[in-house]
Length: 219
Ligand SMILES: O=C(O)COP(=O)(O)O
Ligand SMILES: [Mg+2]
Image (tube, rainbow, N blue to C red; front, top):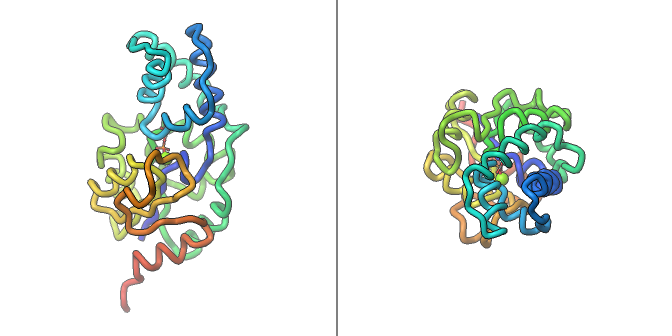
């Protein structure tokens, strides 16, 4: 059985680093910085969406500037780890699921190398042998393709997806996987408004929630 995770807003609280990168990219274009809460609302659909929203906040739609900003962010994303933290209980939950023999994977819209870099920084890269990022395939979440690729690489057995946003809920639904909504991430609408099999408020409850949704096969 497999437990698949979103990254930003689910395993890690990365908004401060993404905020810093975003304002550096805006500064490169001579544009004023944006507040942390504003940038938080732009996270979850990958870097192209992020830069489009950063520019749109300044009333700008300009593919050339967006491409320059995306390149600047890509150039420093792997080092944007200092302000990022694991959500409380993540380390123990991951260890517990590993001990129960679950395959663990990450399916994020963050670029794959930045996703691996932050997992390495947290000492968790070995726990997640499968990491699919927003640039791993031609399609990103909410298209189900990256989640299905993660699921297949984790053995294609019974699986759940743990995520924090509208994008993750839609992606899990399209992939046909039960969705566990982590409620302290970056979603923009009430938790009840998102399709979910369970809501997770505390990572300490994750192994039990997974066991409820993925009962062990009878001998
Ligand atoms: O938008 C991003 O870059 C990443 O977001 P995700 O980890 O929640 O998919
Ligand atoms: Mg997320």
